[in-house]
Image (cartoon, rainbow, N blue to C red; front, side, top):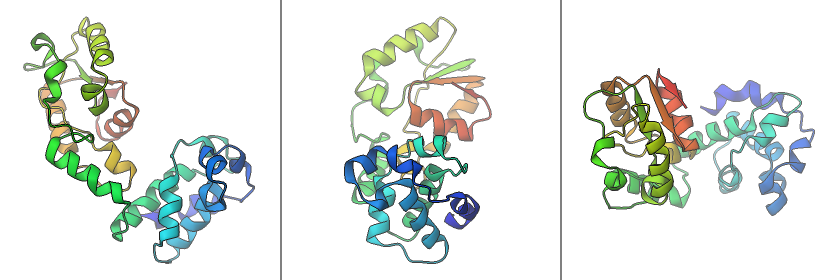
Length: 221
């Protein structure tokens, strides 16, 4: 939880360098909407202060783009601290209103968009996994339902190397995890990937890349 990140929180020297880089701070202009302000709130949370509406507004306006972390002279990682703070907020029952909506979409439909159509409708039969494959192509929710042409173009290239698509791919859970919750279908996906015998998984989705890269013991590209 957030207490595990106290050393990283203390690294923040409140120099303010991040204020000039944060796109949210540029838009909203409040101290609580830049990395320096969020680190102060995270410290209060770690030291036992109860989650508040102000904390919720601060932590959930962060894009976790990590620009602040990549340029911090002290080596602090505000984006990781924010994600830990969000987990604390969820654990304390203070989730943003859209969290339950996303959770419901994934639970009922298998995707974060709430689309009830067949996820694999865009995948020709010859590219669907039957048995084993060295390479699995992971399209993700957005590509499967909103960017099918781009997904198909990528799959056609990768299929030359034997890549196939899982028969029952579901949301990896990245939207929930980034908001501080837990995935509801990650284990389902991991079981399929392990069963496929794949040594490499390729995805065009940044969220899927981060989530699957953290839980798989194969190469994720």
